[in-house]
Image 1 (cartoon, rainbow, N blue to C red):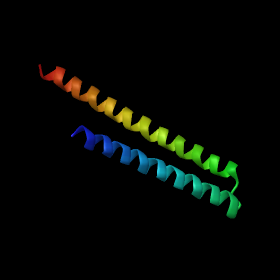
Image 2: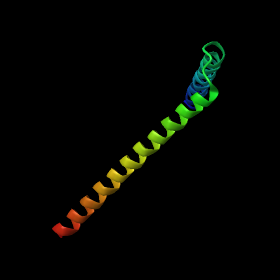
Image 3: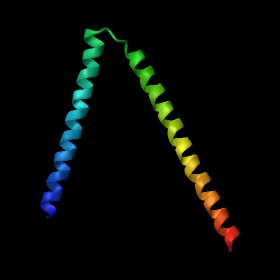
Length: 78
């Protein structure tokens, strides 16, 4: 059983690595063939990471607020 789990983990890691190499090759092709500037790619990456951070902070805030509301309702019932 452990051998099967180990093989699955190795296969997943290999697929992840292959996809990362594919992504890197695509970005290199975009820079070389289509004359896309690296600064443009990095700017888009920064914007994407910023938006992702905002979404994560908003979701965490909603979870925190929901837990506080639920906790205050629980104390009120006692």
